[in-house]
Image (cartoon, rainbow over all chains, first blue to last red; front, side, top):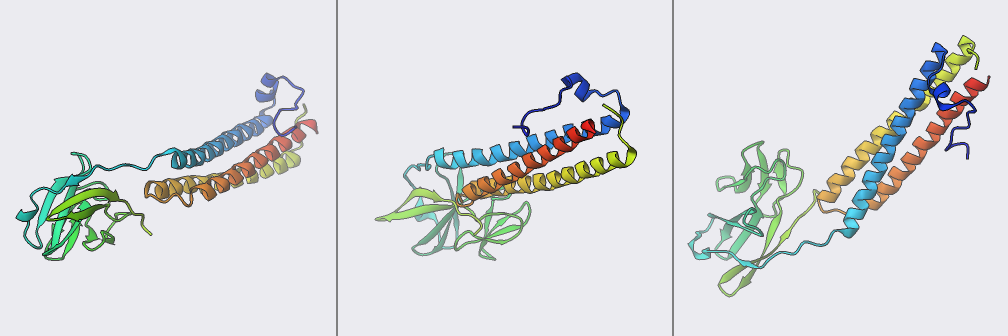
Length: 171
Length: 80
């Protein structure tokens, strides 16, 4: 297979370090082309790695946790709590008497903490003026590439239970 | 191994330069493809992952073919 091996009869040192100056240009170009082809192989391996990762990664499991001190939150007010881990801050807004929406507080652009603007009825990121809808967390304006992850809430009697996180793309 | 005539040598170099430019373009497309696939994957969309890998494989195959073309021109330049 002449494509894969060097059929030159000259030894490698003679092939790579020619005594003719004019041949040097060929050697430089050939080596650079090899380098580019190896870089192309790297990109292909990267894509294969993503395929493997998407098949081997398990679906994340989330704990079931009660949203604390629910009765203290008046309508159109905010409560902050942590879910699913103590490091993941969430922002819950009581939009009506019996309606709550909760999102991750991390902006999907550079992870700044978003806050609720009651005046504009939306979540706002102070870093790059990224605005998110309060209804579904979708991006209204600014550089964030994706909607805010939504915390799934279920009602159990008078309590609100967080049962998972819904991550959405930009579609 | 003889020095080539300037015109023949120039023709070979132009062909190699053209192949190199094509490889660079293919590589840029591959880099874009990888970053777009990673972005989609991290956003929770696994749909484009397999088509992107297949297309990236085809681009890699094209790069290998062009690399072989460059090697062939290089060889023929020495045989002349």
